Image (cartoon, rainbow, N blue to C red):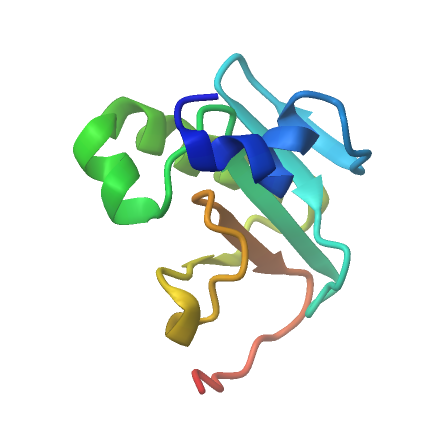
Length: 117
């Protein structure tokens, strides 16, 4: 874990194996697991194993890790659905971020509408 906040971070606990998750894919630096409250037939969270608060922080600190995250998201979408997917990052509580460890939502498996708010 890379910060004080990481000690209480749910996703850091999942990465450490302290909290169970339905893992669908992983690499050396990224893990993907099913969302516990899915919004589509395929709803997977893709999370770097290293703690970063949001996507902007991750992009500034380690662009190659962000690229690894996107690559694993694409792999998951290809394997679990038809490769057509929405990739969503929420940054901040008003945008819907509730766990402050950067994560991407892979949403797929159905024709998706658009309801941003």
